[in-house]
Length: 463
Image 1 (cartoon, rainbow, N blue to C red):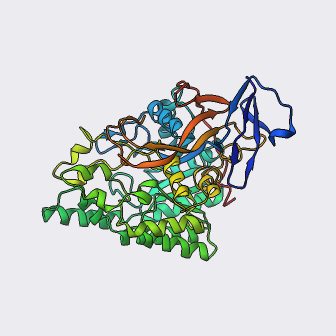
Image 2 (image 1 turned 60 degrees about the vertical axis):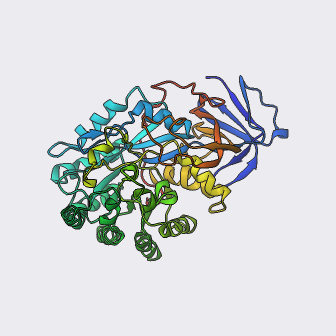
């Protein structure tokens, strides 16, 4: 493999900012040095003068080709990972799903079959447990040993993914013994179903009612409950897609007690709100996801949580459904709108805009988008940083370029953008995945199958 030298840029990691050249050989970073201190030669030189040189993003929460509500997420592993690369993300962790009355291994094999040989960037898997029983609990040990070290359970979606408190406790107890990390979708699904039924009976059928029935208090209640279950089990806990200030308060309280409890939020909760769900006609369906968008006043609490480290990670929960033909399944009944939004291509740029706006600093940008998810899910320092020995997953980023986010120019396989018309400052210029250039001067030069499966270690914040 050719030696590559990235020269003249400002290298930004979660820990440091320094003007340094980066030498890459054999798909890995081999050295960093100030430009005037080395005489390195390389087969390829990338001039990053005036640009940032940052680790490739790690998106710890995506759903490519996910079945939901009688349809499938519109991005395949091929289209979705290509779009991720366009947005400066070089590793995704997707969710393999155990079907009811099937084993965890069967679910994992099915997702390997979807992803094998088609991904543009590297990928790993979490495991959704839909059927917690003695057999699947025993299987958790084997999955952890093989590099699938995190397990998602739902307090939502009765009849589909829902697990009761006893099942969640048993999974947490098993994770406490094998080092795995339990992730939870924390909403009180049983109570939400009652509110959905009552809303529909009153004739409240528009998309905005999706947010009104999935109340913030029911997110907070479930967050509190899974925190206490994890405390009983003696296991670490990661709460996905936190959207409500009341849920942030539960996480902050638990972390103040010294508990190994972690939280993730997503760009949609930081930049969008119930105003979008209430857009005229059926337009609000574009923004239906769960947990739902909240009133704007929740946004500042989420930003504060990211600054104070009560929230550690920003992932996308990328689960796109086209407006035409998919979201439209819920015309006249908000409860039938497929839950999910696109975003894997937009996360790094949106978070850089937060740097420009003064909400977070540059190193915190890299922390929440690259380093923290890599540490959380056992990939650091292979992923998430630029250091000798790390995979050469590197983005040359132009911090001054202006762009307008639009479905007309994005690369996700979905017919709308959740951020249509939003002006942002900053843009990916060049992307390397394990030393191979996949985006060059705003053109895709990668290939399906370059991305490889990455087994993961244990959560580095809890073990």
